Image (cartoon, rainbow, N blue to C red):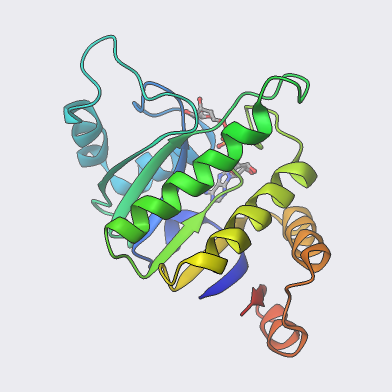
Length: 194
Ligand code: AR6
């Protein structure tokens, strides 16, 4: 199983699933959510509206995940997860964010997917500090890898160069980076822990 960092727009990735940083309605929004809905086309919103878990008045709880198809995206599926809104770090934010990663990986395994890409959940509108969120993303994916074989490829997407560097530092801190593979991959905007 490889854990990679990739710099770019998640909507361009040809993977089995991309994760959407959604809100509890799962009916679209700004940031990466807006970008995913724009790239996927109106079929995605239509499918979200039909999700059996989302009857009127019923929302997707923070930390959980729901799957839809990818519609016009290169990705086959979209996993909609709801990250925590950052308050002060003392309102269970870390556990809720970790759950977004863990539940998404569990769903990918259950669906027998080979590859999944995550944006920096909660790190935009929801205000989660990226350094801390990157540590959680790296820790959860590395912990997952210790006891699971699927998905084969986990990609952490950095939307800009600063975020890429922060992910790289988190991966370095974890001591899991493969320096030879990592350095050649880095030249293409990709760092890898294999
Ligand atoms: N590809 C990859 N990453 C992206 C992209 C993209 N195309 N666009 C933005 N990011 P945010 P949140 C990064 O605000 O904080 C929505 O309205 C961005 O730089 O999208 O979880 C939802 O409906 C940031 O690092 O998600 C919710 O209401 C990260 O994605 C709310 O925002 C997440 O930023 C969720 O807020």
